[in-house]
Amino acid sequence: MNTRALCHALLLALLASGTTFAHAHRAWLLPSATSFSGKEPWVTVDAAVSTDIFYADHNPLRLDGLSITAPDGSRIAPENIGSGKFRSTFDVKLAQPGTYKLAVVNESASASYKLNGETKRWRGAADAAAREIPAGAQDVKLTRMQSRNEVFLTTGKPSDGVLATTGIGLELRPVTHPNDLTAGTPASFVLTLDGKPAGGIEVLVIPGGVRYRDRLDEIKAVTDAAGRFSIRWPAPGMYWLSATHGATGPMDAAASSDAPARRASYSATFEVLPQ
Amino acid sequence: MRLQYHLAHRSLLNYSLALGAAISLPAHAAELAVKLELPRLAVAEYHRPYTAVWIERADQGVAANLAVWYDLKKKDNEGSKWLKDMRTWWRKSGRELQMPVDGLSGATRAPGEHSLLFAGAAPALETLSAGDYVVVVEAAREGGGREVLKVPFQWPGKEAAGAAAARANTSSTSYRRTPVSMGGTVDTGVRRYEGSGSNELGRVSVEVRP
Image (cartoon, rainbow over all chains, first blue to last red; front, side, top):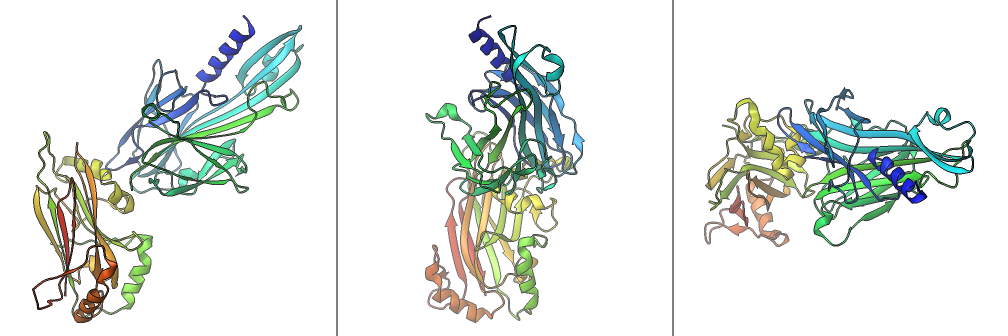
């Protein structure tokens, strides 16, 4: 296998797991709605990895790392899980009033190393590198990767319980309630890295519906020293927000076996309603 | 039947509630009359709109809910599934309520003109201090459109009706829709404010009667 084909295979493997590099492909969750009323409403969610946000045309997002937190903090199970050619789907019954958090969290590692003069690539579980990379490997460059994709849903009165962060990786702590977003009104958030404010991180926001316009119309923001940033939504619709901390890829120059590089990424889908 | 419901548990309202409680009730309180027209629409599939009527303060916070019309006859309260489609009302106060609410909720209405009348001592109005307010009407139709219409008005509050009428006369320039004096040359003190919808709502009028 030549280098180019190898890179291609590696990229495909990464994409299939929902991890993205250099924004070439994006992992997203798309709920049927984010604001609900009535008794025990249901939501159905699409999950995929694709170039254009919210158009499933590449790979389904694996749901191994899916967790759903109910307003009272309990974990609830998704129902009707399925995976097709381009997207995964699942349903959630919103039996409790309040705000839910859906999160797909993945932790993995990738490495490059030389063995008998040949460059090799490896990818696997975060704790398997020492076991699976051959003892004779030289020039080992290891990168740990954490990714988190989230969606917030509210039925009835919004609640704040699920807005707390876990303290692992790059996370978003909403200041403005994430199901209280309206066009023209700024919303504030805080990015945290391992639970601490993450300053100087670039945040990218892309409005859905890109197929029907000629420009991406992305919105950019940078977090301040306290991790804060704010977004003014130009119009109603679904938006995809993403941010990344750290290493840019598995061959990051800073990576070594002793001091692995780390890449922590966060993305979320928000629905912005008319005033 | 009481048509009024005061949204007492909104934290935003605590201030105005406290203020209202500190002032004694007037001997003569004004009335509020709202007339709204639901237009007859030539569409293939027509469903009566879900409609909410409420009062907002100048800061756009909700001062009081006046009426919520929805499909409350469906079994198991299934009609509440679409309350969220009155998006503005839902976000501002609807999602805080457990519908149906006695005295506030009612069945959806047919096309035509509908009247709501609130006595000054009604829960929705009795704590409303003098000032600028807006009556907001939102209609959302299944398989159709949604419209929000705002009609600003001035409420005389706890002052004597005569004094309130005088102030309405002097400050009417601050309104987009100026009050129209009813009753020809004799000023009855009735202040009328109007607005008109473009799709899902027809004419909406608000009358403040001394």
